[in-house]
Image 1: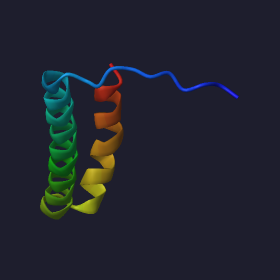
Image 2: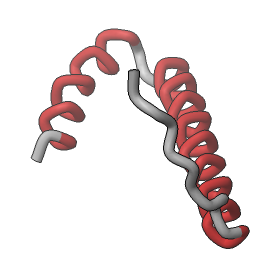
Image 3: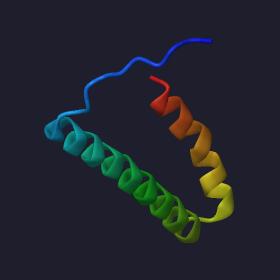
Image 4: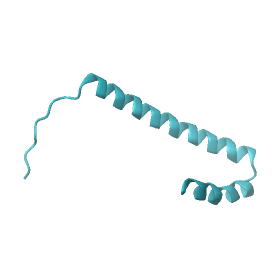
Length: 61
């Protein structure tokens, strides 16, 4: 079995930066979910289904 290696705790600045990055990702995912919800209400279902592959190709660049 491997042994645990003791390390120093993270400095407060690094811990704060990690928290800010986690919040940024979480709020971005919430924003994307809201935009998808609004998009499905505004556009008809057929139009959204046509846009999905185009968006996938655009992000695949």
